[in-house]
Image (cartoon, rainbow, N blue to C red):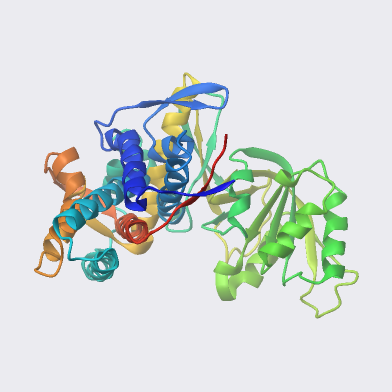
Length: 457
């Protein structure tokens, strides 16, 4: 039964954001503390904000949907920047609590007016970030990794892997049964920062090492029924194998229809879009095909043009994570690797216990993606929340309600006691995404005037 809530939606969102903030605020920084979280059938002790937030909900049927709505802003930050989940929650909560107090003290101001001030400030902040961010070089990689890790442990190792790859992608991070962290430098086709066709498949991607993987590359969109049928037929021939499906363009609905018609486990299909590689994409496909010993197979009913062909073959081994794919052969042939990197790097993460392994894996994951973002999008010097404080100073003016700049200063002043480190460097991409998602979500929460929820009994 659907029920119209009699509570003020701002009160509901205020309570929901406070719950989220209380769950993760203490995890920030090098002195951040842990949380014991129940994952289905076991407990894990972690200080990773994203993992904590994922499991959090409420028994209150009104608060629960508000929590789920607010959680999405932090997930979006993590998806685009690889870090910043906790910072998004903290700043968003301070904005919502500050807006609530501001409206109580200023009854003449409307919620829409206040939300517009928050959105206008967000635009100013994004302009400031574009003007103030700095370019980093490989001498600074270690410092970026150190801030995200919260310590110097492993930061030098991460820096070395990025230097080795020489801006050609990021290392593949996989879980291992062997305690400790090991780095393997290999020759291989390293595809990174690729995009999955639909976010619904992200959780299906295995972060592990796979043997004898089927690799299928396609050149063009396969929305037509006969093309789909032909591809399903090819995929079902080796239904016990993992299949890396590299394609140019395909709609999400077509991909969902494709996976629905497969006789094999859909989680064994790893769809990766190569469209981001632009004009070099076709050359990339050719090189991958050579590397995986593929034969060009006549597309059968795929008669549109000569490029409407499917290439199918096998890689001896594949290392997969959500942002990286490395294809490896025991004996790599000599080809012209003009369009791909021969250098690939795998970081295997183990631990004395499952808790130790999961904690190390998540910290390394955040550090790797923060560094990748800093290399590509620039960085801010200072660290420990000080970039947010400096941005807050730049927007202090008569037209900006003070609670907005206070929300930006909160992390540095209240969690890190106002400290800054000239050697510390934060990724500009993380800062930009944290501000964008926390500000926009807070503005939407403030202007929500009704809540309809399921009255589950």
